[in-house]
View 1 (tube, rainbow, N blue to C red):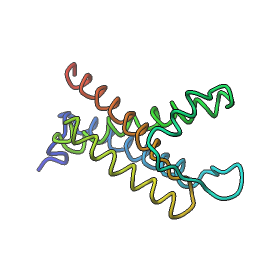
View 2: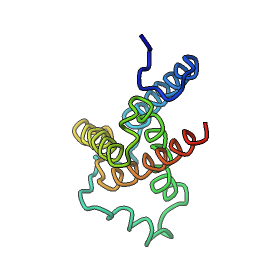
View 3: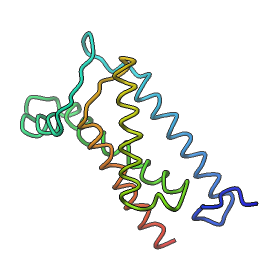
Length: 149
C-alpha cells in the first residue's frame, strides 16, 4: 500500500517533505489569519462589494503607506500561491484549473467567514478574489514543475 496513492513523486522522502512543508504553511497561515493582531482601531469591518477594496488601493494608492498598499494587494496574492502548489499534491484531480479555483474559493470563503464571525479579522470579498488568484498562480507553477520534473 502506497502512502500517497495519488502523489506525483515516487520518492517517499520527497512526498513526506512536501507534506511537512504543507503543514508548516497551514500553521503559519493559521497564525497570520487568526492570531496576529490585525486592528489599528476598534471594531472590525467587512466588504461585500467585489473589487471595491482593490479599486480603492489602485486608484487612491497615494493615500496609503506603501507597505499597507503592497501588503493588501500583493500580500494577499503571494501568501496564497502555496495553496495552488500544495492542494494539487493531495489529489491529481485537483490539478484542473476549475477544480482548484472552486476549492480555493470555498476554503478562503470559510476562512473569511470565520474571521468575520469570530471578529479575528475582517471579511473582504476582494481578499477571496486576490487569494484565489494567488492559488491559481501556484497551480500554474505546479503544472510547470510537473512538466519538467
